[in-house]
Length: 118
Length: 116
Image 1 (tube, chains in turn blue, purple):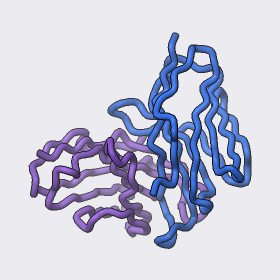
Image 2 (image 1 turned 90 degrees about the horizontal axis):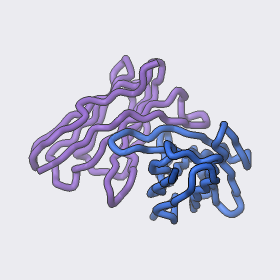
Image 3 (image 1 turned 90 degrees about the vertical axis):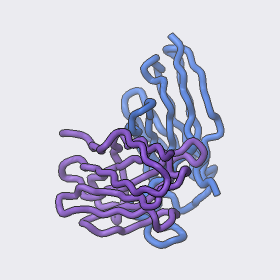
Image 4 (image 1 turned 180 degrees about the vertical axis):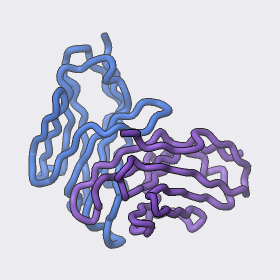
């Protein structure tokens, strides 16, 4: 049961253009969402997050949008740079899950490989 | 501030052996979570520790265990290794008590375990 889905395995974008990465979730208990970037042989690096009480959060070139009714979030990177090329993971957390409290647990999507061409 | 550190970075074991992985969180972080990353299953939550107590556990067999020390450093242990345990094991620390609200986690570089 994949509660967080990133349906696009890969995305290719030209330098300077906008990159839009998408994520869908099914668990209505999720109340906090995060995006991570990962390079090979490294751990994920935290990029930006958003709580369910907001619909948008910006940090520099990164903006995350949350559409709760559609259970959909997206990460916009503007402008895209070649150094942004990496795997991007969407993650979600909840206060509670089927097993009880959900301390310290992030549920991740499968990732999207972003390639930014010079 | 130093980031999350994990040792060793690479490990090769044979089936049936056991292994212990170590994680040092960012200074001041008291919550430590562990994840397993495999090509087939992606990133899967193993367990979380806070103040030396395991507060949450993912859907993994009892061969996977962990502990946390008073200085917040954490170890995870896998006994009776199986081929399918080959994975990248990631540790993450969080500055907040995730029992309250929001939960940014900061990851270490991981330990690459290969089981032969």
